[in-house]
Length: 296
Image 1 (cartoon, helix red, strand yellow):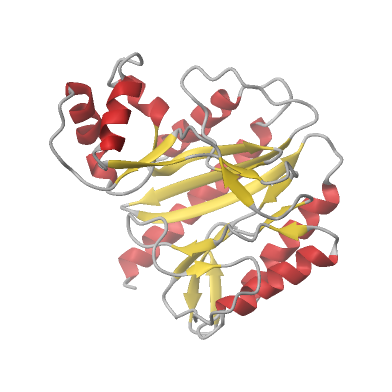
Image 2 (image 1 turned 90 degrees about the vertical axis):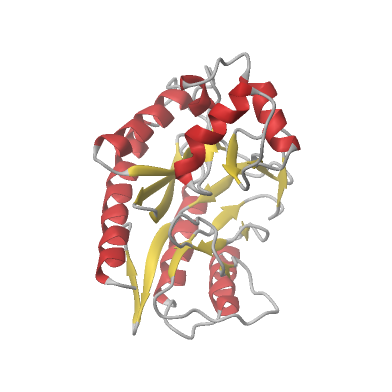
């Protein structure tokens, strides 16, 4: 990794950390999810950075990939547990970070052990460390408090314009023994739940990414391709498209792009038994004798 890349990762991390903390304060009963998402995304752009992925705001049993819809009216309640997942990039170099807010006041133990599992996983990251060992640390920490890690969600390596690149970092002990290498940039994100410990997909995605470029029949589909081209493969939200395409035409255009395998969708992920889910996440750079957390 050269000095420019390192500088970009650090700058993205510093911005993501600040905006995550600002976004956390916006999560209150009666506030619209859409308002929080738009304020957070606007803030990222306002400080001269770019959005690595649509802000994810996940409530209760939703673990990942919920981005508010166009004109979304959903509001937070005083009984909600809310995860906020924020992504920032500088020239494609990504910082990915998340936190969870317990508006109910009833799940402090779940959040505390989840955050502890993240800290202990990060403490074990260094060149040569086994991803299975990292997963075992997360699993043992969460299970020791009577909860379960989400076994089919993982942390991930990030590279320029590539949010899920190469290495996966499990949240349970696994039978393979892949090793962490110096210079890797990793998003470490344990999820904890009082449910079953697995997630399943819902049907309708609000988040997509480009996977190919092909001819399309619909003018609106071509506009979407052009508008999202500079994102490379980074995800985008369907509601972003309403700035360039009539909301009435968006479903048809998105369906055409999906049918031609030009884009792929990421449906929201729900805990299998409707358990409450907590998520905490930091991005780290693996150094010679440990790692540097960019999103503290």
